[in-house]
Length: 483
Image 1: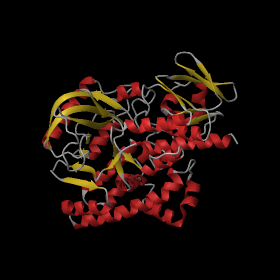
Image 2: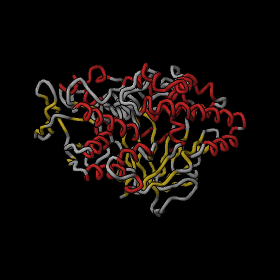
Image 3: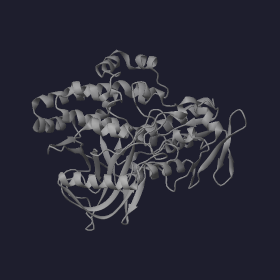
Image 4: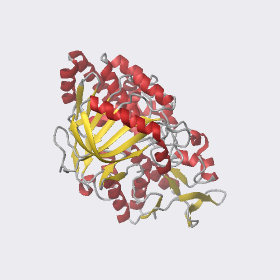
């Protein structure tokens, strides 16, 4: 996603752009897996922060609406706890507050109202000062946010963990657990991640969309937009080394041995791969200390075609573990939790309706649990993964969801390591284990002249809109450095 965004910005500005991608299709972690003859989104499943993509495509003379058919989600996610409680977070704060009032009572609804106001103020404070700032720093953050932003940051207790702050925001432990899950959007533990991640609540309230034809359509649309301005794409063409003339970048060497000259290279893959030397010694040296960053979480995902009966699935569904501290303690110990939180994306459903265009042969599901990032080490073996799947099936059945499976596939940390080498299966770049860590992600520029970074493990971080912003930062740095 970072590479696609950079390609659009640079090609639209008249630069000659050539993209090499080791995968057979564009998009990186935005990928689809074929099961029983059907394509299942096996990475990101929705679009948030739509304005980032509209702004990006505007530079290419188009827009998301012109390129794709998007549908808003009314229910952001359906949540289920093992005591039988069910709660839908909806698109508007008012609708969610009403649902919380019905499920948890007036005190919880009031607490949610305060939380929404705080998360909105935090989003407004950090949007320009951090997320859309190519090189944020603590001192500059204070200057850019202004007094109102500093007050919002102070109320968020940015030096405390998300879990501890939510314990002060919500009396009901189930709501604390629900909003603590936002830490996993960055592959972090809520017991270590900074409380500023609560701004994700407002990002979702600004809108969540699905794409007709699947999320891969977004990557294809971005590739088309860049191609209209002359960018050339070579898929299935992995780069083996960034070449230098001793002083700056001089091109790249592909895995087939061919060399392509160029004075500017953007690496839009895993920072861990560069740190492991997979793009050569010069690229690794250019990262400095960022080359050895601690890893975020991985996952085990099951791509399933099945008849789903019982539980009324929405598009996004979360089945919470009974003991959140125990779940993350197991992950920290390098094992799959015995009682994991389970995410199910029912990709043929819209909220509170039957499957779209229902296939009598069943519907498409993505089932995910968090996993330790040990795909290149002592990762969970097939037996452990199979045992986890058995526990997942039993948990879903206990919630009322029965799956009669037509076909399935599984990807765990070793599989993600093969797909995205160098990170051990970590899916979100650097781990966020404290308030300093968001500032420790590498920026677009590196110590090697002509070598730039983009992607979800660079600033401003993981997720489709953040990765797209990183590509825009890289393009802007290249054009500024050429002046």
